Image (cartoon, rainbow, N blue to C red):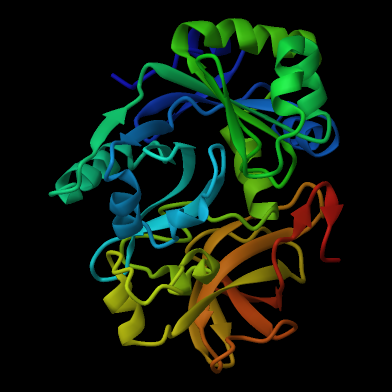
Length: 363
């Protein structure tokens, strides 16, 4: 039997079309993926992300432990509420998972990991805890709701005015605890908003209060087109345990400034230069770019990792892993061919993200 979030009955009552995602029954859409996508870009939409797992890492060894386990350096989090994005690597430099780490206090951190990898991540953390003085606690008692869009924060404050004072001053990628809730100004859509973790029993009431303020329920289909337009990686597609973050457009999340910080996977990353790069593609003809389509470039063959039709732009876009043409990687503007059912279709390498804060960044 598939797992269900605390909002499962709420989704059924709202007419959601459900689908299996990482072993969870999740809403794919509530009638129109396109309408949900555009509501997030122009107003506000909300997503049930309770299938993702919050993991609390606490104790006097929490900082040292996470400095060892994460490729990004949590020592950057110099005040409660600061957050960063990082990959967790295996010894060969492959990506175990990508996650957000939030410092709650100097001896307590919240990691938010992907649903499909949650059990694997939890086991990996516990296996590597070793002599570090930490406790690792999965927070399946919590639900999470992401409210995204240019009107998202105002909608949250309208639904719960008491949250304004606590959250109005939050900068992007910061968070605050408000009672039993953790409210972070983060997201996976390229728009502003909050991700709210709260007691599972309280989630349906928050969902309904937001809906009363005009926030549109949105499903996984819109979340995927939104994140791809924003140039955000999807675990299992754009990065895996067999790919390095340096070949996944995530070199900016690998912090090697401190020579003495020996994080898992660092020796492998430093042993050899990456041979591939993740690039953006724009299809120059009609059609839709999809994952696993072969890409022929002047430097050799690659593969699309994520592809879709962009509702905001009106044409098809993709992320693709292709051979590096040199130390800097493939050049923006280079034309390539994508194999679509045996027919080579023209595409161009472009800079991503493709869309951010409702604005098209390519044409």
